[in-house]
Image (cartoon, rainbow, N blue to C red; front, side, top):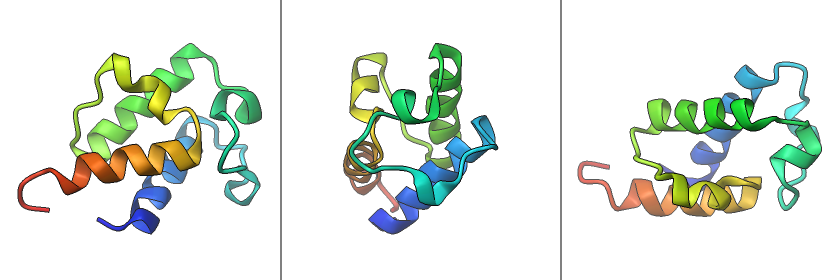
Length: 86
């Protein structure tokens, strides 16, 4: 999966949690919680959506690696590349 595809998955997951967001307005280096006003439950739903869509395990200790669009793309790219069959 390419980084652009991963970015689309991330933005799609955010869109389901916060449908009022404009994907073009997401600032890549700014925390999702700050710019999208996500609460803890929204963030957990976001992580679960990523798990469901990408099939990767995301341990709670790694949640901070998903706080921004740039960080999430890098983290998920490393997880999807290492999976067999991708």
